Image 1 (tube, rainbow, N blue to C red):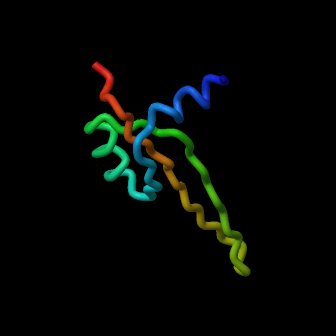
Image 2: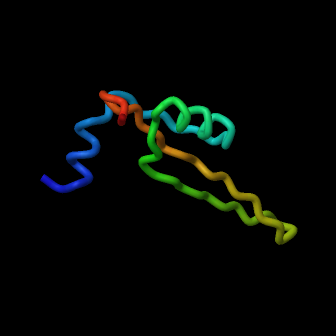
Length: 64
C-alpha cells in the first residue's frame, strides 16, 4: 500500500472549496488539503483568469 492509499483510507469525507476563507476555516477544524488544482482561461482580449480549487479531506480521527 502506498502512502497516498494509506492517507485516503483515513479520510471520512472529501469536499472541494474555492474560497480561501473556507479553506482556513476547514484547516482550523482539523481538515487537511489533499490536492490543489488551478485552471486558467485566456480571453479574446488577452487577459487571463484563474480558478484555484482546494480538495479537502476530513480525517476519521483528528490529529492530536
